[in-house]
Amino acid sequence: MKTIFKPDYDKAERKAYYLLQLAGIKKFPIKLNKLIRQFSNLKLRKYTWFAKKWSMSVEEVCNLTKSNEGCCWYIKDIDQYMILYNDTVDNPGRIRWTIAHELGHYMLKHNEITNRSIFARNSLTEDEYEVFEKEANCFARNLLAPNVVLRELKPDSPHFISDMCNVSYEASTHIYNFLIEGVRRGIFYSKNHPSIKLFKDYIWKKRHSHMCSNCNSTFVKENPTYCPICGNNSITKGEGFEMLYSEIELLESHQAKKCPRCTNELILGSYCHVCGIYLINKCTGYEPGETEYNYNSSRVYWHSNDKGCGELLEGDARFCPKCGSTSTFYEDGILKDWEEEKKEKEELDKLLS
Image (cartoon, rainbow, N blue to C red; front, side, top):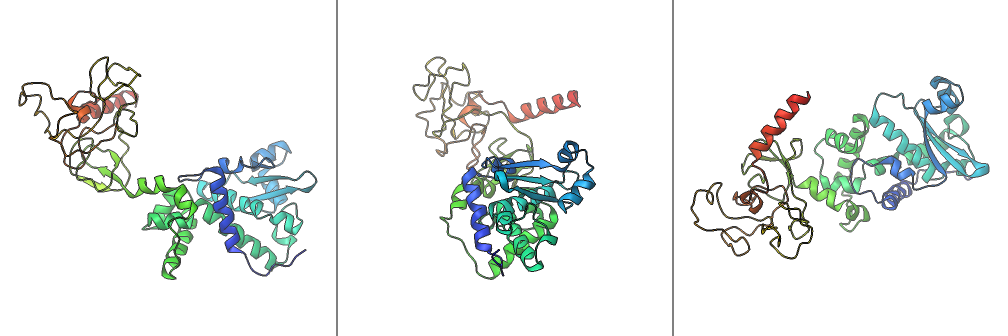
């Protein structure tokens, strides 16, 4: 057996990033089952499953695997692996770390290198065991909370990492300290790093998520001045509110995929050729009620209306987040008034509670 003197952190990090690429993971928290499904010779099983199958107690499984957390079991004759984890552990974030850690042993071929069925401290020298454990921890850290992605998100506390990545607070504290130390030492990553490209949409969403304290909505917009749901300017950066308002599914051009009034799916232009409704949601330049109370004596043709700021809006926008004017979908009654919709939802929640 080849003697190893120091952990290969670069290799562990590369393997973690490779696996994220292989599985096409693009957001947090990382779905570990999706990663494991990439390999035909790898299975994930619980301690309770193993205990039931072999008429054992969980405590006996812990003794067998020589771990209260989990293990990576290698069956050399058929080249099959099984990651076992203790599902009786109370902390879900800790369980996720265990699975990622054991997946690191699998990806780094530690069982094959050491010629061990189960990777355990008492089967190796202390130096060898420490090296492999450090590599597996490095892999787990970069798999569950890749440093290159976190640097783009600029977390301000371990809590941010714990909530976003679904890891234990203990693990998130180590990750946060590692991140800060990297910044202090001047370590940087290229903007063209594959993981940044993979997570680019998620990063953009996290950077530009905002909350409105007036209507309790959360929305994504770069530098908004007004809430697109209620038109109020009581907005703060971040996520938190769970009130979801109705929206119309749009194409990239901000045009409805199908007519929201008559459900016609054959879209031939900016107006529905069946019912005549305007199909693009954009800023109107009007205040609420301005068109309703005969300030304009005839129908407004939105395609030629240049009163607004020109902002194209999302499918749930009643108001323009840039200037606060109403949206075309709101003016045409396609989207309900936010207060009416919020009241209906609250009444329904009361009935169901």
